[in-house]
Image 1 (cartoon, rainbow, N blue to C red):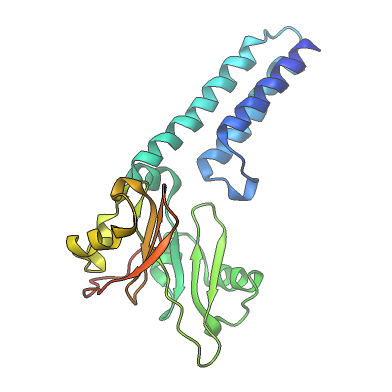
Image 2 (image 1 turned 45 degrees about the vertical axis):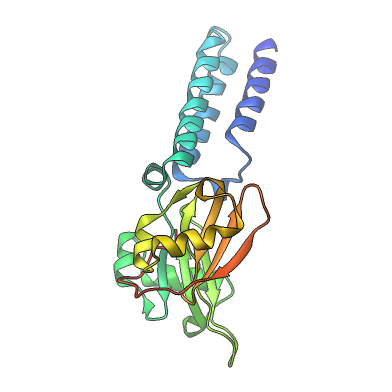
Length: 227
């Protein structure tokens, strides 16, 4: 009885520390940690002869194995992309990307079924289809006839750090980037910043309301990643 109460309270606080996510929103590493947590927490409960610490110590260790990489990932985008992966565009204006679906070990049938499940059974009406790091499938439909073509926002800064590869791809100069920061206290104040192919920049600072600004883009050298 006492073991059950202690383990339950410990798991409650550990899950709160790890953050609130549904199973479908977890990254692969988070899902594995959660499954192991459930297993090790049961060890001292199933066998009265097993000491309580054999469940407590692994639970605390697993919690740190989840919290520490998450903290490092917030500071280092490359580490976050290594542990969590990145969004991958599988359908764009040119059609299905054979290279990207092979990279994700998906078939054309998987793409078609996923588009149908998102309410877009006709691929001709899909502007972008994206596989997110948590495995979810996102679809951006093409506009109605006569409407403006959708532009996929591409991040150029996150958590106070520039995303240099996307800045170069869009041909954004340092002076243009600095000019776009005019509505906040500088790059360290930026939580999120993205750009669209028409030159519209969206900035969400930590200390002031979000805003948009228009800049002149250079020539893109390649198709950027969604994140």
